[in-house]
Image (tube, rainbow, N blue to C red):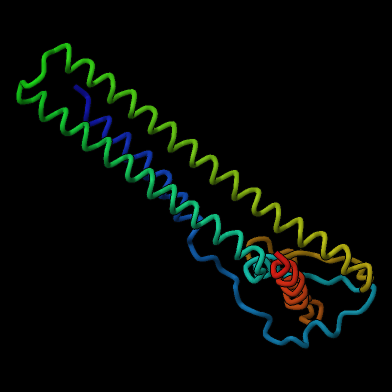
Length: 203
């Protein structure tokens, strides 16, 4: 009987989903606001300006709302899988107890073990499916946020006529050193949030 391997497989499946949930709910960096709101005032038409994309995303209310919703769903999935996993582990232990005490015929033991193995495989498949679903939804979330930002910046630049709008972050460092007056992050955050809140209030 390899029932201990079944329990370990169940635990591994739950751990995989828990790890994904922790990834979703872990705090992100770069939430600081622009130190001086007046920094955006010196950028003029023809300049190359930049936004700190990590800060922009983390301060964007649309991102916060979508992520909160995804985190809640991830937590619900984790709770459901943990409940199913505990039930399966309990049934496996009950089977082991009956088998070790000689309370089952060989035929009944084989049938129960086959049933438990099938349930364990179904549980693993479910955990994997839920993990893929969360990963896919996170990708869609990020795409939605980036599309909203890109669409807004295209309209924004029609009015301001900057030569280019670059994105930089702690990870990429596209702009290593730059005039702080060319950092339009806070202005974009404020404008995007004003638009988003207005649209959200209409719903």
